[in-house]
Image 1 (cartoon, rainbow, N blue to C red):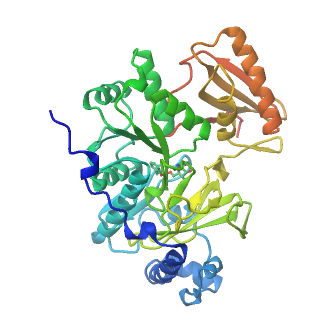
Image 2: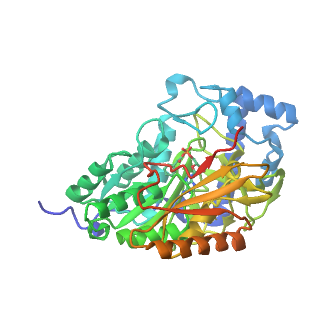
Image 3: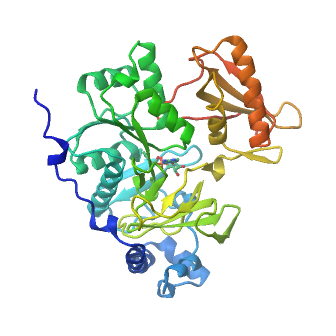
Length: 439
Ligand code: DLL
């Protein structure tokens, strides 16, 4: 069969908003913010009650900084109003529903009008294009389809960009490999740990992941580090870029990373206004560059306008580079509610990932187990050695990692180096933390 038209012949224009200056974006943000807050106040009882109780009114929003006067929205607000209580349109205008399972408590349900779905596809397509995916390419989508926003969100983005989508969904790793070999996709969309699972499985079958047709991977839905990027780029001989999003705010495509700069995801600020706050003192706003918790306000959403939503994701805002008018977010170090506090020291799985991947002989496959054998919490890092790592080397590697964690994080922990293939593999978002303490 002949190939598709050469990439250069397919149109691939930027959205006009992508090239707006910072001033233009902020002026658009103010108009849209005023509209959104008034819209939410008029249509969603929870917002009206909260704002009345706090003594603020949409008319108080005269400049962007006034947003800080408005109360936050929490996941708990969506749970309290489960399933549809925060929707701002009648059900007949809701074109799609998604839900995030959440590790604790009730699912949170989110809805989209046709216009919301259209905006979502547009922003997702922006992300893919920024990461180097091109119209006319074949795109293997291994994010899970269903209530999770990953599968259908990435699907619509890839379709909107003008690619040929292969809607594989997550899991069935053997089949993923067959399809990657038979259909020869140019790009893959999945979580970083699932790409690792696919690469490992290929190697076990004697297939070199570097020999596949894949050129770009657009990875997200869980925290990952520069070290993991390097691991995957070398393993597959690809460019690996980040994509960020969350169901409550939209889904994948709130922010995306450039394959040219690989310096963090650009937030599409014509549709979302980000803030950074102190996670432990939320009344304290933090400036650009300062690490804290990310908060989002949607500027155009119809079915589920979301105002000052506390993501619990920890990162910082940085000036735009590849799209100078839109700020970037740094890597997400973790979630404030996922933080392990070990004898007074705060620790995130991504710190362990970063350190472990610098130690020769250790693989990216690890899990953290917290126990309380006596009165003190203990942390064990269970980590697989690489297949070519001897037992002598494994002992030295364990000591090296233990020391690196002590020096860089400040925690004492036990390192159990285990055999290759002995820890559970990811099929989507990987669970890293096993809290075995009695509750
Ligand atoms: O995970 C949406 C998504 C799907 C994003 C596919 C990217 C790709 P939720 O299931 O609602 O939505 O989970 C959202 O996942 O608050 C972060 O903690 C985490 N997360 C998402 N993207 C990234 C990323 C989807 N690129 C939660 N880096 C968020 C780090 C991420 N964490």
